[in-house]
Image (tube, rainbow, N blue to C red; front, side, top):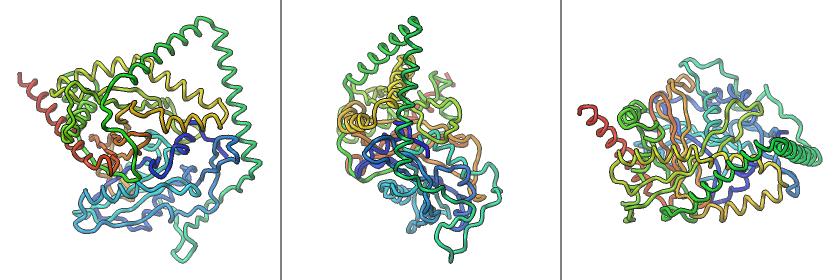
Length: 475
């Protein structure tokens, strides 16, 4: 048994019928499409490296501790790896609609929290894989590590494992056997001991801090400064027309850009690659708001930008390790170059504000209090704590830089799917792969069915930045 961190368990607690907490991706390939059996063999060959994919959630009784991961004795690979097809002509829009329906459905809590869908019928003989994994298992960065295990750096894959014949029980795996299911007493013992250990570690760390008065004073000052900046940022006005209650259904849109072109813009006007991409996102939101008839002059769209706090591989396996910054996107600025300069200053100030450190510290402290208190806090955060504080979330996930293959077929594009939560109706995931950036834009189908307008606005703003950079080169 492995006990969840507070952050991982929070993603479980936040999930409901209108708020599904699975991260995902669409991986598109050119033909020929592999058979369903080939996909099973490819996935089965990687399962030993990702034990979590054969584990399910076990929740202790009466909320005495955080949930634990245990082996699923009824694990069925064919249950998790599924097969579907698009009707002719197999357009990108049809794939996005199919993906939106799949990502709108909650994962079964009684089974390992992941699915993979083989989608055939894309135009020009293409096909796709849709990956779906609960946020309690991985964050975006760890999720790329898992997806990377399913992809090969060369066309010839490693020797596959043998999948049982079709007349054998579904999902039979003769090379793996689940450990015995833990008793209720075992689960309670592990979770209570873990809570006690967390409390002891917290007390020791607090005592060490108090033993060094100068360090303690510096820490308190830093936390106070970061908390003040964070509170001031969240209290300032921003566009709130983008938030509200969620429906159970999702809409997905894609945007694309070249890393080479992003670097061209950065070299011309300064800032970082992330500054340039956020400028394009700002232009996308400006286009979306204007298409809805919402005034943008002097307005900002506040986005939460998750920050990866993982400094090295976690020996305990994939888990969430994130903090956050809060950035105001100046949608009132019509000139994309001026917008980039504004965002460069804003992001530099945010990085030195201490906001991320305050949130990281809050997550660390959250491992200490009793689970019942954390349940109440999580419920409050989900219902009230984020209402009208942020308009959107924009997360950048670094992906592989070289071409990758699945079952010998080259991966063409990879788009991230980020789940909606709280009152946020639009979220943007950004993933790099093989010299390109792919943006996956998740929208609430009822409240934001027009996220394709945002996607086109992102690409149009990027085109305007590229043209401005080229003009500067010729001056």
